[in-house]
Image 1 (cartoon, rainbow, N blue to C red):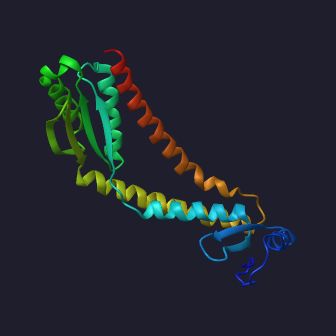
Image 2: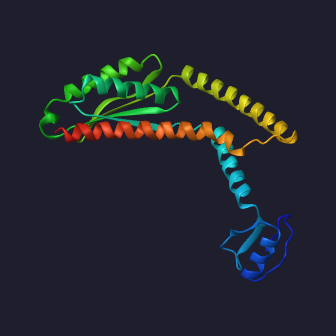
Image 3: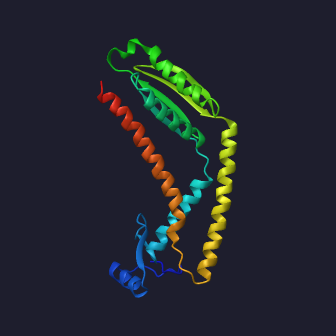
Length: 220
């Protein structure tokens, strides 16, 4: 058992530990369930979860992970959907990610691979100002795929943008601390909104791309 100040309180029963936590107006949290006996700590659980989320956000900001986003097509994908998927691909590239285009063939569509190649060439030409071809169109079973990656200039611009955002975030954090010190009410969750909103946009866009591919399949 560890108290809120990090002092070891020794081994005690669960009921006694819970009583101690309630007396301090805090929670009893199991922080090492694999230990024998398990290690618990008295703390403010809400604050603990907030700090954990904050650490994860900091780690995510410092990471430079290049993902491969997949954009699915069908030989029968119409011009409107191709335009939508091309714009999605550009958004992924501008976000520092690679994009894999996959054209799936069904039935006798496999006898006309030139249609898929035309689609890939069209989309590729619309992205060449910001992307490089990493893998040219090639057949794999009943699919044709191609991979494009961001140009160095795009990655550099993205790094500069993120550095500026980090600078602004730190400035906002300092302003928030100053406001708290002055006795103003400032919600801690406020700094999470931008990251959560961006994640939701990415998830929604991925869902839309998959939904469009499913609709193409249903039309068959």
